Amino acid sequence: MSSTALLDELQLAQELIMALLDPVQEPIQDDSYRRQYHPDLSPLGWHLGHCTYTECYWLQEVVLGDDRFTTPVAELYTPGRTLKPERSAKLPALDVLIQWTHDMQSLNAETLDIAPKALAEHPLMQDDYLLHFLIQHYSQHYETMLAVLTQRALAIATPDFQASQPLISSPVRQDR
Image (cartoon, rainbow, N blue to C red):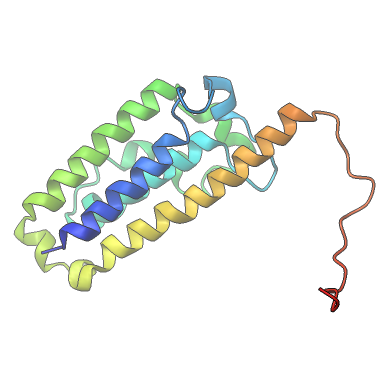
C-alpha cells in the first residue's frame, strides 16, 4: 500500500514534535506547556494534541469510520471550537497527553502497517494522499511550535522587554 519511506517520514515528523516537549532536551514543565506565549499562537501542548487528533480523525474516523478516539477530544483539538485563550486550562497534564499521543500514534502506525481492506480502498489513501497530508500537517505545527518556543525564550530572557520601534529593513547595499 504505502511506501516504507513515507511511513518513516511520518514517524520522523511525529518524533520531531515530541522532541520539542522532551524534558531532557527542553525544560518543559506542565505550566509552560500550557502557557500561551503569544496571542496568535496556541500553547505547545495544544499543538501536540491537535496533530494527534488530526491524525486519528482522518485515519480512524474518516477512513475507517471509527470515531471513538476522536469524539472525546474533538471539542478541544478542533480549531475554532475552543478559543486560543481557553485552550491552556482545558489541556490534560503533560504526562497524560504524551501517553495518549504515544498510544494513538502506535495504533495508527499499526493500522497503516496491516492496511485493512477499507483503508487500502479509501480514496484518501490513493497515491498516498493522506500520508503526505499528515506529514505536512505535522511539519506545519513543528514550525509553529518552534515559534512558540522562541516566544517562550524571549519571555524568559527579557520578561519586561518592549521594542521602542519596529525594525525597518533597509535597501540592500550595492557595494558588497
